[in-house]
Length: 405
Image 1: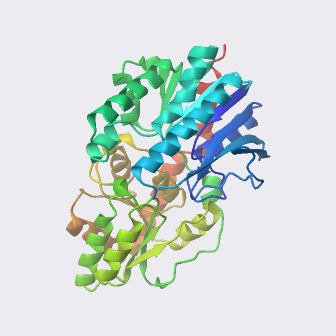
Image 2: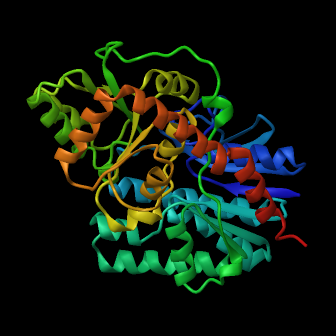
């Protein structure tokens, strides 16, 4: 079977962003299918192609995946207007591929929501089978975050969301809340499947050399956050806790923030102005380097802004990386991840917007290293029990390919 796969932010493990689409494509190939990946040039991502762009695109084969990459640079630090323009340019270019390429199934994954547009055209103009994967609920999330307030824009996004869901023969949600959100838009439960992000145990279970960024000594408790430094991530919560820890003289507790994003310069400025030497900023790293960093860390920070839509409506890569590496997790919002942390006793599930509780959790971790080690073992058990990447990928492949009778 030939699968045409649209993911604007695709990356191989050589990049410093999530690799779900890479792993899913590789699993399709493992099962004897052919995959053409259509993507853009994502900041922090790495498609594996190195040739020159010709008429705005370049092609090649990476690890068995046929890749069509558009010359459309994108970064999380871009402004809203620029990002929206890039999203629509990608969608328009993708439509031409969807209407001319030879394939059996078209698969599109968010974000952005505009990823569904080529699938809509393929379904209704070519009669192709369309599977739509939803990683975040739009426009619910930007509306609750206050990022988008224009009622006309929100209405247009709602229409596009409805059209994408109703055009798809099947949908995939990455979290329980996303699945329920799709159903609420009128999609039959039999057409929606939960396939969350997975744990790359083949990467994080290997014996690797541990490393710590400059400023973190061997005896320090290293709490690491790996991901985008944006509005959604609410990283001021980490700095608020760091400020309290500094006041209490707990300088041996270091918070390491690894990644990039629109708010990173402001966070760095705040940390410098408040003298938060216990907060270390580091550029993003690829998966191999990340595995080494995790080996040197003591606890992972799963942080998000206090937005109710996040509670059950996200499936963050970083959480699954943490438990893959056997790291206990400090999670600062309620929801399905907090529930699993409590069930497996593999970290700290604290209330949002409470720097005192945040700081106390880190102090408890620093003062009870043996307990922390046991939490880490249970975290790895959670990863192995419920989130093995290949098991989830096999379920995903069966769901996508069985649309063809």
